Length: 286
Image (cartoon, rainbow, N blue to C red; front, side, top):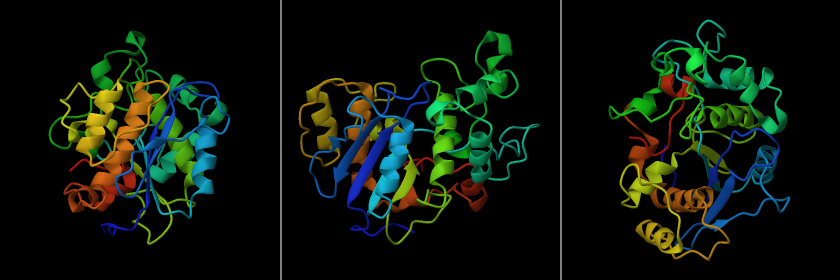
């Protein structure tokens, strides 16, 4: 199903964080209204920085609104290639079961999951040379390998600046708490009304603006306005600071609005029912 042009009136992009602690400067929430008005940053309720729990509460308060919200983390671990998310440990048959498993076995503050990875290092996760050969941990989901080029990191690689593991497993805890309350694509179909959550990858939005692969960060006002213009958006209001988190969120909110009615993004050829249930999909991968 492809949403009608007027199905969503608000497009939200959330740059996520798996960092330890209860408040995170790495989380940014941006919102773009229908039309061509510039996206804006949503201030955290505390006035300081977002917590993951505050993001959860913010979404639930808006669950009945026609909002499309994208999160920049992997919604599941690879399953199709090996027939398991955590081979030899769990028998999670689909992504929802994995979310519940992670939430039940992680007691970190603010929906964190660092301890989940640390207690499984060397078995499922690579956190350094002591864990063996890094290549043994490199497994990808179908959407990450589509096109023949996997993402630079996998949820089993938990070290380095490009790692997505900590954010993704913390995100799975959030998805577990949202389950049954806000639909999550493609595990759920697109609902006729209310909010919907999708997985995003900010580099896809950056490439849609004409930025080259590997040069996807925007760090000044002119570059941000150029990116927004390529996505049919008006110029932004000046920011207090042009952090990667803020500009990624703003640009991707505008991108979601720009591409929401593209049929190929909602129906990728490789997105079978089995892939959808066990691994999910990154919106924007075709």
